[in-house]
Image (cartoon, rainbow over all chains, first blue to last red; front, side, top):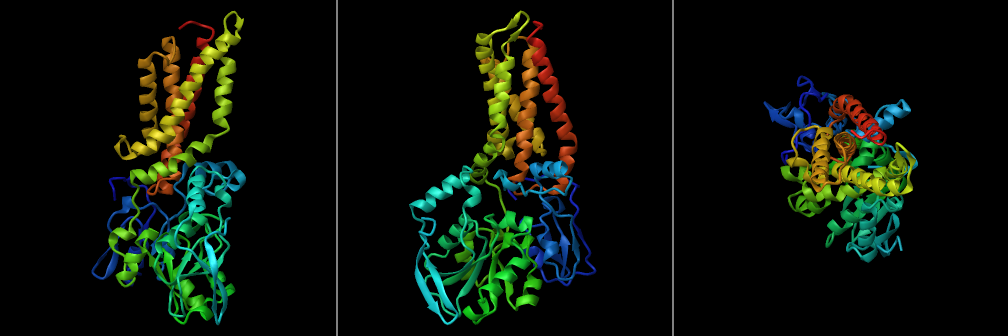
Length: 98
Length: 345
């Protein structure tokens, strides 16, 4: 990390270590070094670094990780409120997409 | 012109495939600049399919990417001097990370492209290298189950691919992590500037028109002079939110982007106050602090979408208080400003 940490204690990331097989896939896909390995199983080292991208949960064969993933984007959240949907960065035809 | 990167074809037992240049030409550089400025960004695409780099054979590696041309360009440039295959999947012209978040860079699309283009006939091995940031949309174990191909997640940045391959398809920790250095933040500023393009013409115009109001009626001269100052204040607040805040992000106090935006907005307002152009009366000055703070705060908050480390839960928490505060500040400021048109306070 380059000193940039967002709000603390808000992230929805949960790891069920009892299901973990120790395959290290979560460590591999995480862009923010959230996971580590202890006693051959994954452990959450830096929860507040998590940006809820969902890559770890998606690639966990055992389904040991859950996270409410989505776009951490204010414009996307406003989009969602205006359309009555989940936050979406799908800005349609305006051409201003991420 | 869009296909200037293709030179010739390669014949294999599985068919003919276009062979591509790894060096960028002038139109590639120009396209990269234009797309950063939102010019034709949503149409900057490559046709999905299989492309050859160098002189690949049945044992060469396969690299997967999306069909946003800038993603494709970064990948082919990183493969300079190598032989390999590129499998471009259809992400609707969106870059890999965003497409993965939206679900277009997905397990389904990779599986579909492997089948459509008969990748299993092109290579003998069963491995594909997928950019790590695509993992948000791809379940490696499902791709394996459905196609027999093992997904190997490559580094975050295409430029690290050579080192990744040389290390035996192993990424170092640094290659796996997303940072957000100054140069990256600055690259994203133009897109943010264009976010409010129409509003930033209409709103100053409304202020210009209203600026002509005075207790005795309406004056066009007043509209031009005072309205011009209003426009400068508005643009300064906008600039503070979508240029200063991203550029100075790590050095501005507070974690909330909206709070960072108030800091930069007020900083710019302070400069204008010292320059003597912010407003004439105390009420007008205070009103501008409120409006510029709100505007800068809102634009800074929008930069969460460009940043590489904000979570959905965090942004939702931030907005719950920030959005009402911004609306309150802007409304109060606007009312105060209107009042100064009629009462000299």
